[in-house]
Structure formats: structure tokens, C-alpha cells
Length: 117
Image (cartoon, rainbow, N blue to C red):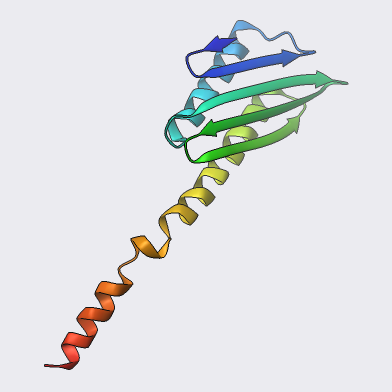
């Protein structure tokens, strides 16, 4: 299934329309939280009653991915969403905690000017 900025592939699994919609909503949620210019590829495989999910998001900030396994497709979707959110949060912390975004220089300057009073 190809939608605007996502591809979803199925291997060994024949999803119902409901499951396809659920997966599309999950991937769209991930894309909504992803950095700019994101494109997602998700693959779901089923073998021996085990469902494996893999999602790869390519964005302007770089690649992100998550994997999950379970016996139910809905559980795998939820795990993928949680794992990807965790990865995005780690990226955001790293991205926005750079010294260039901190006010250390301003704080140092203010504290030294206070000493002169």
C-alpha cells in the first residue's frame, strides 16, 4: 500500500481492511511526530504465528527505525509506535540540548555584571 509519504508492505500476512487502516493510522501518527520531510516504510511479516513489524523513517534530520514482535498485529503496531516515539524523544533531547541553544553565555554575562554593582 502506497500513501502520500509512506509505504506499507506485508509478507506472509493477509491484512483485513480494518488492520490496513489501523496500520496506516499508526504510520501517519509516527510521521506527524517525525522531523521535517519524513518518509516512512513499514514492513509486517508473519511466520509461525509470530508477527514482526519494522518501520524505517527517513527525514531531513536523519534515519530512524524501530522493530517489534508479537502474536497480535495490534500489539506490534502499538510497540512500534512506542519505540519510535522513544527514538524521536532521544533525538529531540540531543538536538535541543546543544550548547548553541543554551543561554550559558547570557547567564555568565549577567552574573558578571551583577558583581560590578
